Image (cartoon, rainbow, N blue to C red; front, side, top):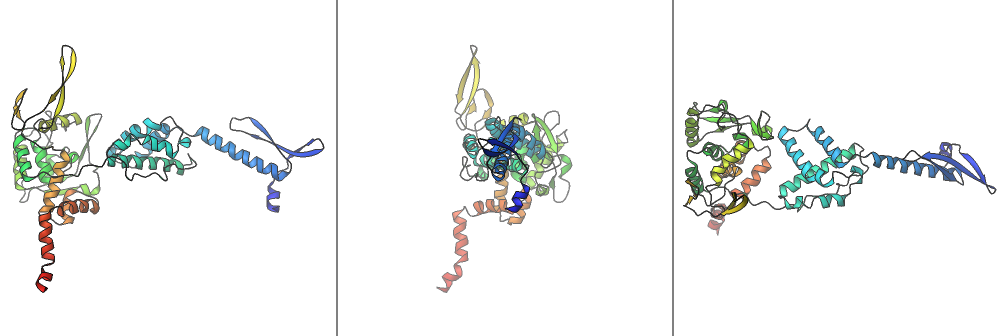
Length: 405
């Protein structure tokens, strides 16, 4: 108590009706003076501390940046640490799912309830998108808290568990589907892309950045090296030498069928890129979509297109029938009764490795997985999703018991 009394300043006094009051003046957040009174110096000292703390908080809240302002600053700070493609993804999600919903609010005013409401539209997206947006919220507000932009972090109890729409289980193409797909696009622009995906397992961004200087066809054991990655900025292709992870840089042996395909493609190529546009340049995003459309138009998936009739935009629904020709293009035959995605080609490659009893560490290397957990999750789902193989495996495991009995 004595130590506290020694810290208490000497206040002015005021006599009212025979009573002495201690008096001092503080300045509030708006810069206006406020007079405080106390019956004792201790009472006035406590009032002064409380007023100053409140004033500091008010100034703090008043100066707190908006969510939009701080998010843009956070994105700039991340540009030093992450790949260009990662930053592009961050920027898109932050602006679309955070700034759009909460951009005008002050960082210090945002509550957990505000964030939960803002996440409602995101909950209708895939579970992976929902989880990534949650991570961004937590990262942004944690940084703001550590930088003393906000007093408390409203995302401490924020969880991605159970949020978003569960993604469909990835399925590999069957051998029969692979042959039908290749037959449908033989001689068409996406053929080489599809062959590399199916027989080398490269990611889309790895295929579209692949140059002939990374394809070795004249060795005893032909192979290709993954050392570049493709992405687009404002629909323009950008080729990076920085890959997704260090594990993405790898050498992939070429099966004979793929090696022959690439030899033929190289003989007819005038570009340094294995897959290129007519000018020999890497594809833009729009050009890749157009490339993939060769496959989509050959599926029996129902789709809608628009035509102008008498000045009006009219929707037409196409319901393709397997084996028939397209009404407006006799060269197109509806020959695929299954959907195909670029990533499905890679998944088919990995699945075939596993079914061929390639060991998990080799699968991890060839797939370019940085984490063995990713490989093992796929390995477990693929390897043990065949009841016939499980029966044989279990039978072999317990055969000695049967003999003993």
